[in-house]
Image 1 (cartoon, rainbow, N blue to C red):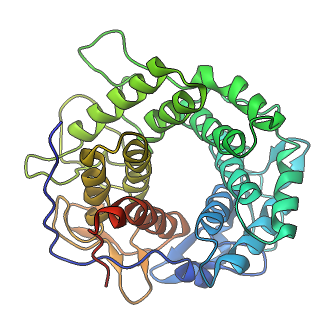
Image 2: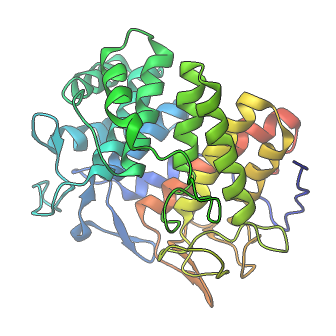
Length: 351
């Protein structure tokens, strides 16, 4: 592999949780916004609370970390609707909605709880996170991305404590649902089409392979991530992420592109760099981060300097100007992965 050269035209903000504060209310974190204005009537989604909790754990030194962690943890506790089951969202009054439960939402919550249980947050947050996790040892999903998030949660717990029973159960129950390769090499991706959070799948393979000392599993993850990064790069060298409707062989660029794709790619490539030290992966993280700074298919910035949040989507004619929780988290998560990787090489370019 050869390293890519990045020449961003705009600088990036430093990762901070402060922009999430505007999305908090007494229930938890508000899912959607109308422009910059949070819309509590859209509800408070379990997966947003889980991912915000996870980012608060990783950025535990941030001025807003404790309030974000406590608010989102409280939302998760209120979202338990049975032993080992979360509702999808709470309404504006803190009442579970009638939406069907979501494997993705539950697995993302487990990821956040695992980070909160193993990072230096207040003891009350760590203890409550462990208590919630204890209810979900039997969780399993047949869906690749939910299973991948559960595997990542498992590896977080097992790296912290090799005797973690919850971690071992989550790994055992979900590993088989994370696809490894496509035996028909005409289309390398292990699904008929790319979907959402695509890099999550190879990241789970990398994490599990490293934890288990399974070189073949690790190599499958690295090969799949290498293919994905190459496939989603444009001829001009920037990322042209899979749009919301998915992507099969050929057919690029596509719209709307979602910030969550940049986040998943940055985290997977940061993990690959941490393990291998290959500068190709550091450059790939930088490309994912600079997608927000305008190095993308339309050349427009995907974040709002006034709020510090990301726009909800890159469109053919500009941006979706709404600034919901997932998009805000995607920018923070991508910037954090960029800092973890690029700062070691002295490359960070923050405003």
